[in-house]
Length: 342
View (tube, rainbow, N blue to C red):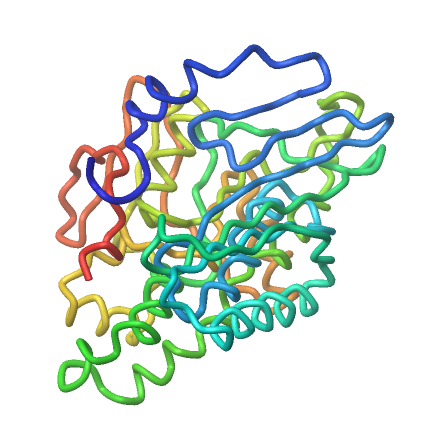
């Protein structure tokens, strides 16, 4: 099998279709395009998500905290706790394990998230570090939550820029491949992109935007004016747009000409022949909203840039991209992330 996430078809046939039926305690479980599970806990809701870091190398501890916490934030919820599993190869040193733990502790401290447990072992089943994190947050009664599905006519927005995490990994783990092809100042810039990888701030800001006109509720919780959020991980911006549309059973048109990309990320992607729109991009949050101006304003007030990059359409129109040349093309389903080409 190819390296990377399973295709949507494989995920459905090999995994999702074989899971047992959910109990009444689970409001939302595993699904294509679903970032988190939602469970009843008395009057409150528990939101949880799990993610592995397999290509993070020496920065796996940093990334492990953010990828799972970002999923919680993409539900408009502040993460409160996290579990970390570290599987080290036999070649690992004690210093490398300490480095990963220190990274995770530092980033969790920045977010105000408790590391409450996990597991650490050395195994000859892996030839490089694998770090798996499971984050969770609690939604108290009366707190606004996103609608959960994009609707035709919603605008598609992105925070910050595309290719943040991919640029960070490339600069930290593959700088030898960039030397002589990318300006040293760009490589140095990309190595600092860990400061951009969290979307907890923007996710919780948008989650708290209660709709002033909608009376919709979710298990007694008021709806946010944001209909759906999705953090941009493997598959990049295109993959995230496709998954949001597929999950919501609508169409989508993504305009690549509008997707923000730093000169640094563009230079790295050009040097490594990577498609920046299909490159892992933690740090960017994709948003479906019928009130894009309100979203842009709320984030701008907190110093976060948001950009409209497309629109959700009716299902029959399918998933499409507008290329840099202005041509409209069918958007392919997510496949192996560009990072695995390095």
